Image 1 (cartoon, rainbow, N blue to C red):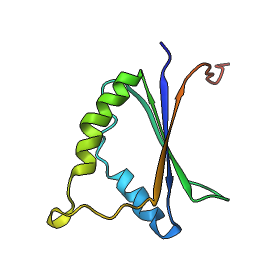
Image 2 (tube, rainbow, N blue to C red):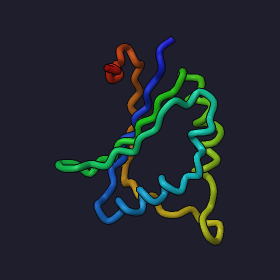
Image 3 (cartoon, rainbow, N blue to C red):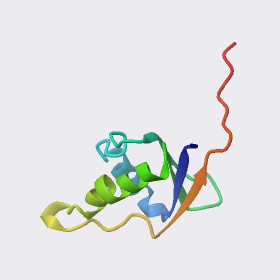
Length: 109
């Protein structure tokens, strides 16, 4: 069974980029400890767009769904100081889903 890739496309205004990146860096490894998790990358736009890409790769769709319903849901429902949730850094979000059908790694020479 092929791995699945989930790419969350986040529209982030320029004044919120630092906030978004800090939130991801302080996420305390929630995704890394999830069963079926294979890879994570936060991709910052370089030019021509305000969209960050959050790339995750999973063993299968069931592993991703278990993370969504468990650790991810709990992390996004938690409150900040005073029990209030911080204002979202992204102004919009779209989730793209893919199956890995081919892959390559550098050849060892």
